[in-house]
Image 1 (cartoon, rainbow, N blue to C red):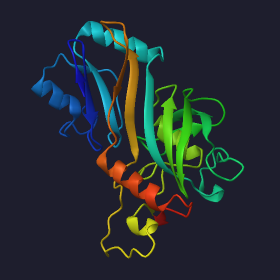
Image 2 (cartoon, rainbow, N blue to C red; image 1 turned 135 degrees about the horizontal axis):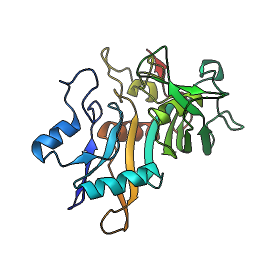
Image 3 (cartoon, rainbow, N blue to C red; image 1 turned 90 degrees about the horizontal axis):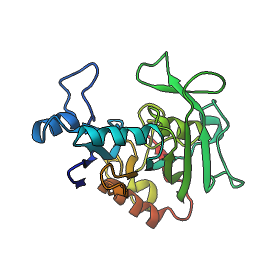
Image 4 (cartoon, one colour; image 1 turned 90 degrees about the vertical axis):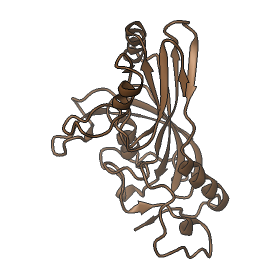
Length: 261
């Protein structure tokens, strides 16, 4: 997506690891490809979950890596994600906290989830929200951009950078990300036949989005050499654009836009 003498940025597809897997070193990963094609001097400054697509920033020099890593640690880098979420009924939401709703029972225009996160001792690789003491402090700001019945298109701005932070915070708010295999409802899928009246669909009709609907859209940081405020962006994946097109066309009247398999 961008390259100069100090930094290089990539648009990572969903399903691709950023770095080698802890247990399976044979799995293909972004940095392995980068080191093979560009050189081992390139280092990633941050990470994304394998299932999350979008912008990954890397440093091409040790000096740039030190400066950018310091910005991430000091929380001066502004990260923006976009997610398609399923707004669950209160009785099906996580019990960690009351689902966040406005007076009409919808996700509010803006809301913030501040809840510590920690490893889930019962499920390796997963995180859990901590209501009282313990865990790492975690804060995410959210803005509801569009509503489509039981779905919503949400902008996510994490103030901290914990593992699975956006995913867990949306789940505890009662609006898990569509297609999230850990914190969502695997039975909820979005198909064109759910949206278009009279559309029968095929027997083998596929969901419009067949992955976790979370995308790292942009990063704003201070360039390590020029010291200018720099914003890099990654376009939405095509399946997101297609799903949003159909949602905007057929689901603006507020009827339910998802169904259980």
